[in-house]
Amino acid sequence: MVSRSGGTGRRTGLKIQRGQLHEGSSPSSGNGTTPRFFRCLPIRYRVKRVNTMIDIDFKEGLVPVIAQDHETGEVLMMAFANRESWEMTLKTGIVHYWSRSRKKLWKKGETSGNVQEVKEIRVDCDGDCILIKVNQIGGAACHTGYRSCFYRVVRGDRLEVDGVKVFDPAEKYPAANNPQEK
Image (tube, rainbow, N blue to C red; front, side):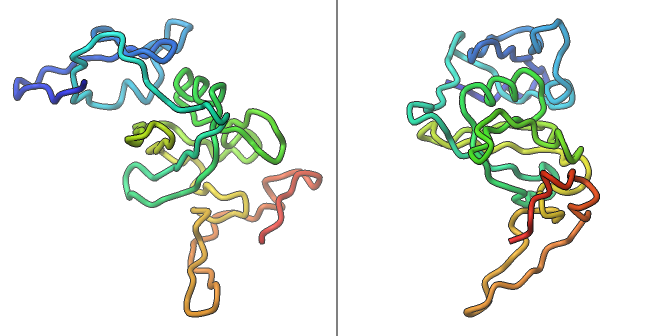
């Protein structure tokens, strides 16, 4: 149970450790430092029940994760997370996904430099979908070079590009790993 703190202006820090919320101190990344996304966010909620589990439904292995620009609200991409990528995201403050094609943990931006810094995390009502509001470093989320993976729009019976291309994939990715635009 979470409630808004009163109008006193008092802020309560939250500590996330192994999927649990603790009222009181700042969150720790495990090495004694506070992930940057926790330091820059105003904490507007107070946990009423201590040790409430962050309940994500990984029973089928993966959950969809939507990355959204924290300032504009633009949807940048959708990928999947498993328990390991979820825990790495919480620990580091940098978004990690599970690559279904490569079948491995994927730190967003590990090759391109287009890292996603976590600003806020929301979980849907069923606990089976995650929305992460991010600061998109490098300006582009899509491996094809566009700001958003949703750079095409359906107009009648056609698919038209209306997104902003930020980089040339051939310049960011080694030849063997260069994703092709579809």
